[in-house]
Amino acid sequence: MDRRDEVAFDAFYSASWGRLFSQAYVLTGDRETAQDLTQEALLRAWRRWDRITGYEDPEGWTRRVLHNLCIESWRRSRTRSAHRAVEAPTTPDIPVHHHQLAQAMRDLPGEQARALLLHDGLGMTVRETADELAVPEGTVRSWLSRSRKVVAARITQSEQSEQPPVRRS
Image 1 (cartoon, rainbow, N blue to C red):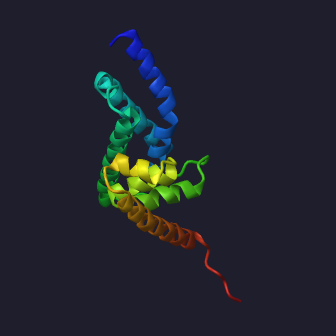
Image 2: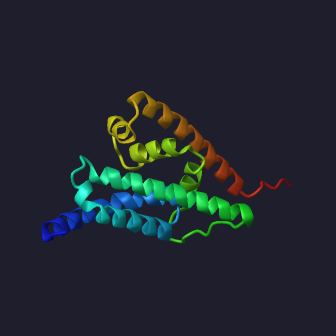
Image 3: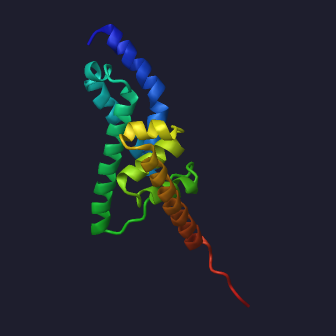
């Protein structure tokens, strides 16, 4: 890799890091895991930089890799949780609603979660989301509608379970 490629990748890294980390954080609910997965996705982009620079959207390729890494992380954590019940630790400087959102998104099918993240989380348009997911815009709209209902119900359920019981005198 020559110096121009290194400079181009450094610019890509700087421009993409925040958006990629945000995606990983929403999907994992854990700052450290999100950082690790974002680094892994960017490392994979670096290793294939000569190829992905020719792609129309190198960040889109990296987002897809990151999404797959997050899904793998979910599967590993579900497998571990099936063997032992452990409550996920919370990070003091991360608002509780972020943890609730990440947990709720885990209940969504993979592509629906990805559509919601791309559209609502990263601010992509329906068209951009459809292009990235290679599905019709109507499918994205449908997924968004269903996903928002599932997430809202899950967060409401979570908030209600955290309320202390009302004592009657």
